[in-house]
Image 1: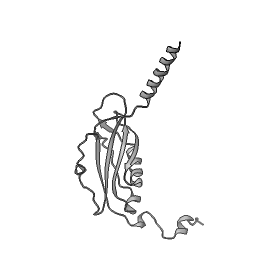
Image 2: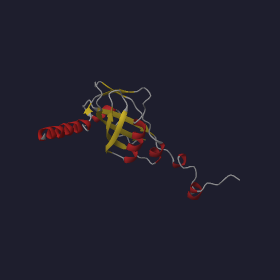
Image 3: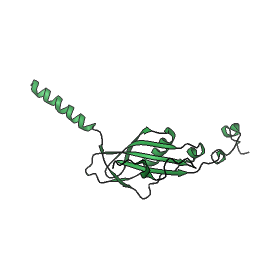
Image 4: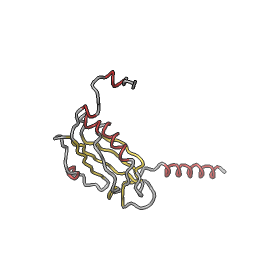
Amino acid sequence: MRVKGIFVAVLLGAVSMVAHAEARWCSIRGKGPNDKLVYPDIARTARVFGLVKARIEFLPGGPVRAMNRISGSPLLFSLMKQQMVHWTLQTDARGHEPCQAIVVTAFNIDDYALWRNPKDERVDAPSVLRLVVEGESLPVETVITTNDPVERAYPKRPE
C-alpha cells in the first residue's frame, strides 16, 4: 500500500513538471502579411528610441501567447507588446508544444539610428527575430492639442 502511495506521488510530480515545462526554442520563419510594427506617436513625441529585447512565446500555428521584456525601454516594450500579441508567427516547428524565441527591435528616430538593417545586429541564432522600426520625432502639438493644462484637465462644456 505504501509503495502504491509513493508511486502515485511520483506520477503526480512528473505530470506537474510536464505541465509547467518551459517552451522549446523554435526558429521564426516569417510573420503574417498584415503584421506590422508601428512607431507609436507618444514615443515619437517623447523622442524615445533604443534597442528592445524581449522573449516571445507562441504556438507553432502562429498565435503569440506572451512576451517578456529582457532589456530596453519599458515604454517601447509595452507599445511593441500591444501590437505583437495580435501577430501570427510562422515556424518550422512541429507538434502543439509552445515555442519561444528572442525579439530584438531597434526603434530608430530621426538621425539616432542604432542600426538600419536588422541583420546588422550579427546575431546568427535562428530563434532570434530582428526588427527595425523607423520614425520621425513629432512636435508636442500633435499629441497635446492645447497648451493650457487646466483646459486639458477640465474641457469647456458646450453651451
